[in-house]
Image 1 (cartoon, protein in one colour):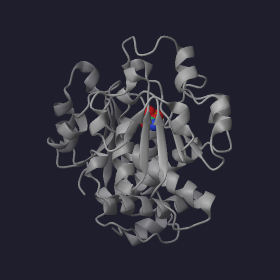
Image 2 (cartoon, helix red, strand yellow):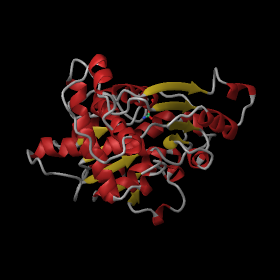
Image 3 (cartoon, helix red, strand yellow):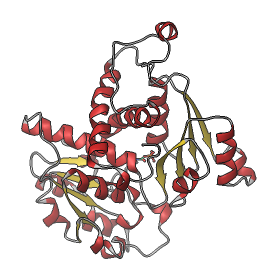
Image 4 (cartoon, helix red, strand yellow):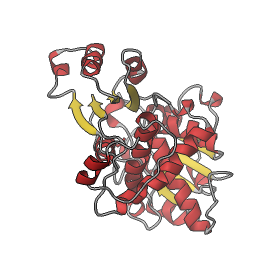
Amino acid sequence: MHHLLSAADLSREEALSIIDLAEEMSEVQTREVKKLPVLRGRTVVNLFFEDSTRTRSSFEIAGKWLSADVINVSAKGSSVSKGESLRDTVRTLSAMGVDALVIRHMASGAPAQAARWTQASVVNAGDGTHEHPTQSLLDAFTMRRHFRAVTGDPQADWTGRTVVIVGDVTHSRVARSNVLLLRTLGARVVLVAPPTQMPSGVDSWPCEATDDLDAALAEADVAMMLRVQKERMHGGYFPTAREYTVGYGLTRDRLAALRPDAAIFHPGPMNRGLEISPDAADAASSRVLDQVAAGVAVRMSVLYHLLGGGSTAPLGPTTTSAEADRKGPTA
Ligand code: CP
């Protein structure tokens, strides 16, 4: 695997390899000294043309915990603001010898285009309304943990589980990547959206689609609420915020109607009171912060798969910087 551009590029074996290694990587989060020497000498650039809290900081933490050098470049404060093109920006950073470019861009397809201009590995960190593959991997990771916790079965996975994804599907790269990955992993995916926010052509997607939220939620093992993306909407998708909440929000009443073992997901950032009520966001069954924590472990695993030269990493005891200097690179 040289790039990660789309969840569709991942075979079941590749996805499982990333998720399984993320389970091992997550152990590092519990250590006092959070450092593995496996990417020493490798350089990762976070190239973000759109705002981000979770994705950018978790890629930065992931790279640093793997001992890579991590540099953050954002459109604001770089020569992009002087008019430099994506192509020239990518080629400029490549000429410096970087090993991976983690790219978020407002244009769908920008990371795939960038991958043609560089020898470095490219990770799609969210491109327009197209895809967000690492979000779907961290969601799948968090779901599997939830299924294992509620069943007590350490082998439980996505097979036969129903994941209901609700909201602004037309503008959601999270929904697209989750549909692709969860089908690969064996889940049943049901998309719920107002007719104006369900993409044309959804019939050809590997999932079901409906506008009946309450019927879908009654079958949900996971209820994933999507953010209403005000910045990508240009009028007319729903009459008022209140009507959206009544029709498609995870309200207090809908929270009470969920199955007791159902989990609530949201990729963040949340519009509390719009697509998700504060009660649902903070419910015991909310896995929102687990998703955030999983983001670091999954992105460690992705960076290791791209740059570490193998599909599994032997995680030894915590290594201090001084010990790492003595030992040298291990991968
Ligand atoms: N889920 C997600 O991509 O969040 P950020 O925009 O904060 O990175």
